[in-house]
Image (cartoon, rainbow, N blue to C red; front, side, top):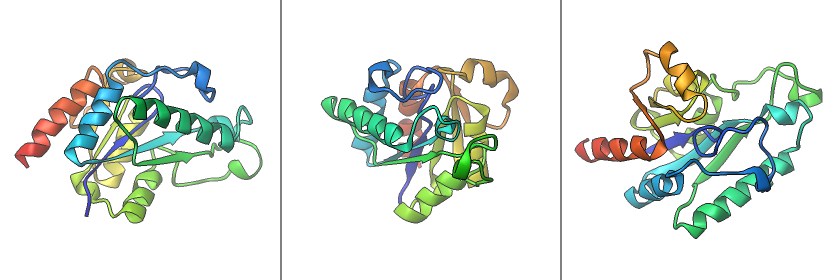
Length: 186
């Protein structure tokens, strides 16, 4: 089974911009490409798991999300990094049409992490969820992963409410450096 690092997208990989879906509005948080490249170089699978309620709310489409993910992948590739898998939840309880249904994929529920584990043979107990929100940490814990909160995005606000995460770091790059050091000791 594989070890993975699950990454939230908005506020962890990119600068938080409410309902981001346009490539021209995308901006990496400093150090993110280097962090992803370090994970790639270490052989750890990198999986993005992101709530995208803007789809359910009618602000943008699944195609828009997939186009943005292709853009991010292209920008990472320019810096020698890549994401192994992208999963997103398009649902929201107050959404529209078929997206307004109860699901188990919307964080803080662990559905996206469990789906990735089944699809890619990931050992959740040997994996880590990194995100900037309480919902990210809760999803990771519910899936059986270790968890890291980053202070980018909403993390500086959520930190005071979290006692359950494994660690707290200023950003993804510092989290990954610490994590890879710990992985090498396991």
